Length: 72
Image (cartoon, rainbow, N blue to C red; front, side, top):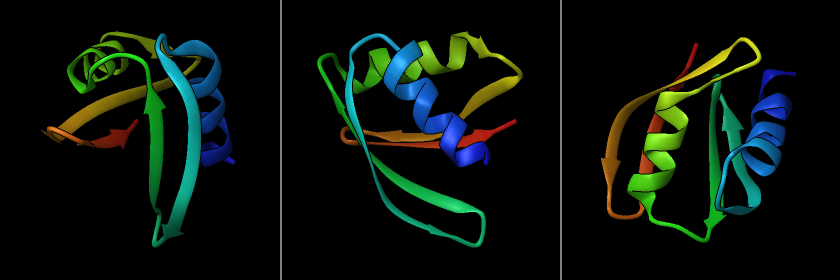
């Protein structure tokens, strides 16, 4: 249920997100591809700086094309 909410948040409440694709979900770890109009850094800043109706995104790692996130 929380994964569904995360995908909804990314699509509707985060600026610059065009589409979200679920690649896998196993052992409480989801891998999502997120199509964005902005940079990865801007996406990470947006996720880390907001709280979305009881869900907080904690950035645990980042590369040029990947963000590792823990959801609280």
